[in-house]
Image (tube, rainbow, N blue to C red; front, side, top):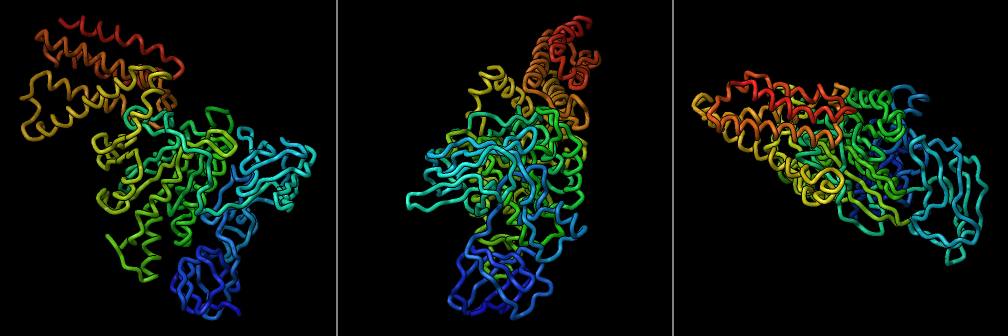
Length: 582
């Protein structure tokens, strides 16, 4: 019996009296074979979510089942590429069709005719299990692609191809399983995007994901395999923040998911990543980046798929033994897509019209992060940094609040800081990181035992400054004693000289941890000496007029990253400035 469309409501299509579909099965809808997914089954009807524009579909058009879930095609060629939310290669489509994606476009995500230099790592007679690496390919100059035995397969190798150049669909290995069935392995495999890839063991998160952004690395660090939310209203710099993090963090690979973002922002990512040289390899950053662009004018249903496609690709590279960072910009657009489709399904709405299952969907996404031991006994991680766009910068709305439940780093962006041109506009009073205790041993051993001690002192000064500024608003600063005025002055030094960072300055755009340590040392030395100066009965104004506070603020520009030892001279400079005051 042919399955036919019974009703069409935007991206939601129903089929009546059909028993041939399975839950979450991938289907093709209509004569153009639009990609869809079964999201609800009852005795009388099957509901399908279509990931493309349903314009032109008619009642009675056929629906074709595939018998398998929506899956990502995984193999060499993912890096340096840009895909839409359902893994269609936008560069390939642009070359063939122009600037618009034709409805029902069925283009392979990877170029099946391209050839790759393959080095086989196994021999005939070897026993292989799921996840074992059987071949390697230099995918880019900085990333080695490791071909792994598909999940669920194990057996004895009966055929191994010679080392050489092969296309993606060429058979390079044959495995005989316990049932004497022969399985042919090529350069690619498929994996359902909504199913987490299995691992051998989840490991504790004890290594930071270093970004070179002082406010993150020092005050609110994230661990490799950790999760972070970047909530902020319009214009607070969420996208800029994620661009900076993607450019400079010490992950091996970046998966950047533009979920419902403006097209010009994705264009900017493409152009910047193409031009930027990776500081670790001196090669273009795009060589270790996968871009997924599901812009705001693309079909709304595909936003959800784009998030899962991105994390499935990230897990694939994690299983090779790489540390991967996923940038999701923005999860609010994905939640809005859930709300729209939920409304069309006539489900009972929860808070602000979002579906009742919003928290579980958010948790399913963030739970796929982690630091793990892979099936082939290597260590890898997936870190997820998700931007949230609360309407009106209201952090009490459901997406922000539910995200907060499932992430351990919260970088709250502040509209006022953004308007003051304070980058990154992370509000240090609202933000937090729960990774400090997990990372203490690493910082003590790899950087300096003083690093987190200095962090604590700086946080204490900022908290004190915040309290005093509330008093100043009421009665003015003139009535404060000099020791309290010093706290406000030191807060200013920390804000302008340390937390504020210039993304366009060659030395300030990325700051290594050892420079961050020395900068904190200088700031706290200035505070200590200023306290002694005031305790001797001297006026703080004399010290401010000496210009030493301004010199400390400007050290971020005056000391290049390759001459960090110059910061050692600042203590003498501070002593000399105090000595000069009579």
